[in-house]
Amino acid sequence: MAYFRALPSSQSCAFSSSTSTSPKVIIIGSGPTALSTAHHLVFPSSSTSTSTSTVSPYTPSDILMIERDPTYGTNSACLSAGGVRTQFSYPQNVAMSNYGLSFLSTIREECMASTTDNPDPMQFVNAGYLFLAGTQNGSDCLQKNHATQQDVGVLGSILLKGGLFSSTNNNNAIETSTDLSSSFPYLNSTDIQLGQYSRGAGDGYFDPYGYMQYLKQKLTSAGVQFLKGEVVGGKLDAQQSISEIHVNCGNDNNKSVFYSFEKVVLCAGSSSGKVLDSFTPCSSSFHSPVQQIPVIGRRRVIHSFTCSDPTLKTIIESDKSNTVPHPLTVDPSGLWYRSEGRDHKTKGCGDKFLTGMSPTESDDDDDYCTMNLMDDRDRIDKCLEINQADTDKFNEVIWPILYNRVEAFGQLKHTGSW
Ligand SMILES: Cc1cc2nc3c(=O)[nH]c(=O)nc-3n(C[C@H](O)[C@H](O)[C@H](O)COP(=O)(O)OP(=O)(O)OC[C@H]3O[C@@H](n4cnc5c(N)ncnc54)[C@H](O)[C@@H]3O)c2cc1C
Image (tube, rainbow, N blue to C red; front, side, top):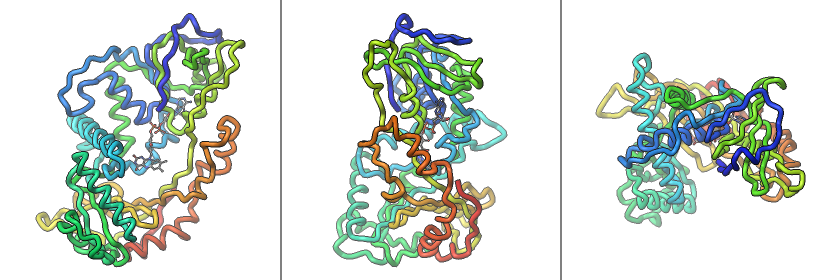
């Protein structure tokens, strides 16, 4: 997310337009970053569970959100795994994610209270994350991260011993841990040193589309303006502040120009770099290159599959009708998988799963720190075939790793990729 100050309207350049309005804050995009920004501006005190009372300098109608695709067909959030975790290595990341979980929980409660026909439109599932380490280095890293998370106040995740667990791991944190094989009997843990499982810390996954629809409807009801259109350019002044925004609302005769605003918040996700590239200097006497931001799109692929083997269900002893969804399990190879959705009969996991693979260095072979972004963005998009799922990879790479970790996945059925 980039943030720019804009100059008063008197500095704006001429641009032919059919519409002109003057919102005080323009937010480009309406994905989770944009919606959360608008929510924090409109409802500052109810954006977290803390009781701090803050007054916004803006009324809802001061805010305009511009979205090129309100169906969210190419929005990263809707294509994502919807996972939320506190298992990070830097304290800052842990603290940010903890804040995010608290925000999500507040919004989910509101959302559930506001609907009668759907008990949980956001479909949050507290499945946890399970990171697996197969080497001593990986194991040391998990223990260090675990300690960092506890220092930040994130409690509830546990360390679990795998088949390779060695006595050199024997510090205080490990003494209290139990075995991976007893907690996850379907999982092959013979080649694992240590696992970290974070269900108790509140980690899990949710439906990003349900979350975004609720926030959008709440903001619209409050008076925030939404515009369907694509930001296709604009003007920058000599201080690189945005002074005009040009929006294509569908065809050449239907363009809008916005100026006279106070703030612009660029939340166009992986397109943010391209959006800023499309801005030009306001004055012909000002020839400095336009500021660039190193944000580019990268290909990430998710595969779905089903597997109904009964050995995959873990029963919570205290409630025989309840099964535990598979956590988002991160294999030492970089592969991850998790349960998908919720089985309403068992209230736990069903037979649907999602999986994917962390990218290797060759998957991301561009060096965006050194390249000339302006020249190379189109080439990168083309080279990486950014919007195509590599379905062959499922059979060749992903399935064998899944089978090694969970024998029952030998019987899985691949149902899709995106
Ligand atoms: C396959 C995959 C899996 C992922 N899994 C996870 C996960 O499990 N957990 C997690 O935390 N993150 C995950 N992510 C990352 C997550 O999706 C992103 O971090 C998140 O969506 C970023 O939100 P955003 O609002 O910044 O961008 P987006 O969600 O991409 O939203 C940007 C919006 O801006 C709009 N836009 C773009 N250009 C313009 C323009 N010129 N004019 C007007 N509108 C424009 C787009 O249409 C879009 O709606 C995953 C991503 C992918 C691709």
